[in-house]
Length: 338
Image (cartoon, rainbow, N blue to C red; front, side, top):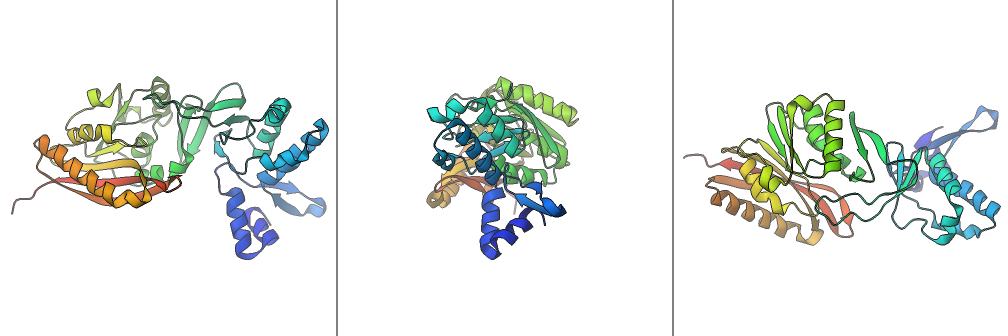
């Protein structure tokens, strides 16, 4: 018996399912199979193995065994890198364990590099605040939905929690579409548009030099660089006009500063905007109304006689308590003559 079935056998019924989801639900928490006597196979979650190995280390160093209760129960795995929560293992006691601790974590979680999350830089380029704990650098190769993302996790952001939205964009039929991505980053949505949705062409706007380097590398790795134009700089100054069938606005907590840019980027007949936002759950309806009216005003100011409506709201993930990352699919179309 392997994987989740083993956990269900151990815990039983619905409780077993809950325990299984808790232990292996995060991207980094895969199950590790161990051989037992008698050629029987069982499974142990990385979280359990980690507690056991760290407990042995604490005993060897004569430290309080109760410290194991401070071990993280969740983490993010990107390629061969595990990123621990920002509050994890920061006391002087943990620091005193040094490299042996990080090596145990890497071995138990099946990676070669360990890092800790840090605050995102407040600069406009939103540089990553990840701190390396084990490994020479933060470069990772992360494969998701048959797409390879290569980047330096200490310089560039990557959210595993947005996987469903990247997948959704890749499932669109964009064979005849020209797309403008106003916040391309390392290619979070550019690559799904090109590789899976088969977009005709993508204009990728980005101003973070570290992200630009990774973006170009990722385009070459997927052999789609000929269908992508990379545009460096502030999209409010550099974005193309009247070329797009779709515009992606994947900036959080809000992309409002570039809504006018997005309207200008659409073809004269209109198109679709994918507008990302962090919004309090109780304010979602008000925000949708505000978005629609704001885009209508911007379109009118640019002489565009469009009907604007929000056709779909995608709830991507909870960003914080009562704050959701949502994406509004906004249809902008010319009025039909009657």
